[in-house]
Length: 332
Image 1: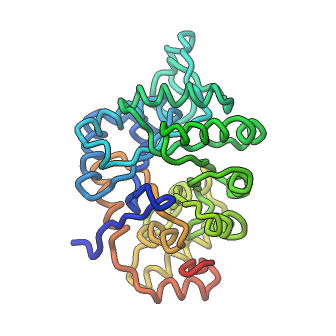
Image 2 (image 1 turned 90 degrees about the vertical axis):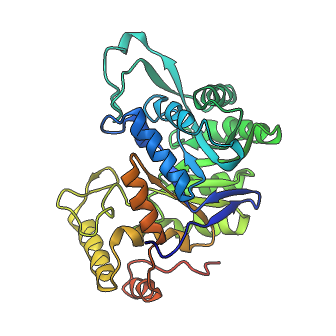
């Protein structure tokens, strides 16, 4: 039995999201095949547990994640859920590669290819295609997806296009989803964006975003959605696995040692490491949700349990005193 329940926080005071979000990359057959039935069951279990925020992208399974998520949510009142997707990778028919498997981690046929495009036209075409795959008449949140090598075009074309679509009511909130904090901070300074999905840079293990993005977001009223809270799986188990990865590569000895210190302090307080990893970002006042990748009902149940388990305040204090994770409660 869980001790707490999921809470709802809002983006810009008008778009409520559950403080645990359903990350749907795995519905696109990330690393291994997933069935339609398994995907639908996971989405329905999340709804039953109180999850209202679902995140996907065209990149995930070359559109498969969007199609499966849309099908699984088809019987749910549209106003009961918040859906986010991303722009920047257009999916273009590629019959010449249809007999091959996708080469970016998804077990799907390469019948289409990804084409980087942060132009205004590309943004609008991407959203139109996502609406069709999701089977919905609107998308609540649209993120620029990994524009690391396309900052100039993203700033000059993509963000103004998203702002226009927000003004037209086609989307309700706009922002960027990235694995770095510096560029999203520049986006906040240059444009009126609503939300940033930040992967792996504000976690129990890594807090580099506290130096730039987090204080700026708080001052500007920009919401942060924390993703990648397990840092590529390193923090996803109570004990650090020998083959653990960090930032999509085998973890170094230094990183493993830091993770093991985190795990030991958590264990001393009767807390498992993944639960602390899920709850830590939510202590910052700018963070509205933690998006966790889910593939199955078991993934949903473990994610909810980790969010709702009781964690003593003494744990956060000791982690801060040890110089491992400053407590962001009351950050200003």
